[in-house]
Image (cartoon, rainbow, N blue to C red; front, side, top):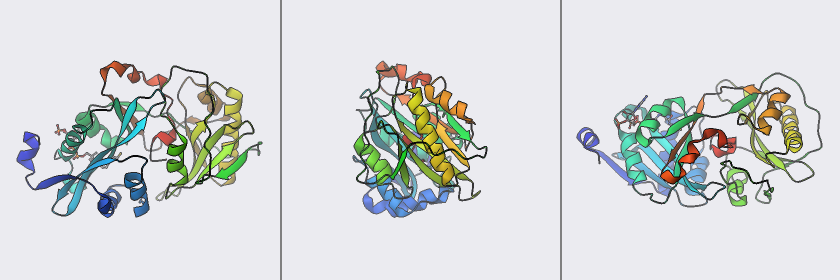
Length: 315
Ligand SMILES: CC(C)(COP(=O)(O)OP(=O)(O)OC[C@H]1O[C@@H](n2cnc3c(N)ncnc32)[C@H](O)[C@@H]1OP(=O)(O)O)[C@@H](O)C(=O)NCCC(=O)NCCS
């Protein structure tokens, strides 16, 4: 325990969360966020992941007042990543170094990670930069809000389910950084998601996009998110067919704002701009990254990342 923290908070106990703590996790998170998730969401994300996660909790008596944890992922190039997740401190306890103490305790248990990352809202930026030493980059959200229908292109639509095969499409080798979306990961992420329904939009050559609907609980604005695209990143023609297929389906479902992440200077970005998407700002989000193994400092070259909405657990 750091000296400053010790002097301030004698009555706080830190321990790893267990499955039986998920109701407390739900209570803490739902007190901090507008979007309220059911218990099943916290179970799925925390205790039903593909590999064990470590979530450290800060308790004041029986009450869970803070959390931080690590969920492992890999990059396409095989590097091991930790999603630096569950950053939360009860509003009565914020600004008392509890988050710093949680991150210190969690990070001391991981010696095998090449990097840590996650996507953070503005309000978490300062604490995350300070406690974890992350560098922050803007996420490349593109939005199409102008009205209009899309023609039905030649795509098939299916609901992501336990039977869905998320094929891997061969791509030309490229010097870029992406999170690896395996069959197992996509099945957990889409088919087993306890809240959102995901659909797979496929073209006849096997490439596909994954989409979902979101209705803002406060404003009632409707969002159609294109969360994932499995396609050769240089194949402009197929990318366009996929995006048009996704737009057609989302508009047919009544979604007014269509969104996708598309990095500048990519074929995907060219295609979505051509269709009419513009840079958006829906609750300003950052990609936080810290390289733990200095031999991989090249990862700070942000334009080389190919981020997708599915890399964030929000979408
Ligand atoms: C983000 C959050 C977890 C931080 O928890 P916290 O206990 O208030 O953070 P701490 O007091 O431990 O602050 C962390 C460090 O960042 C520093 N810090 C805090 N706010 C800061 C700011 N705005 N700018 C720069 N540094 C800041 C603190 O000085 C501290 O460093 P120290 O321990 O060396 O003093 C908490 O505010 C929270 O739960 N917010 C709402 C939920 C949320 O948005 N979570 C993120 C969702 S992804």
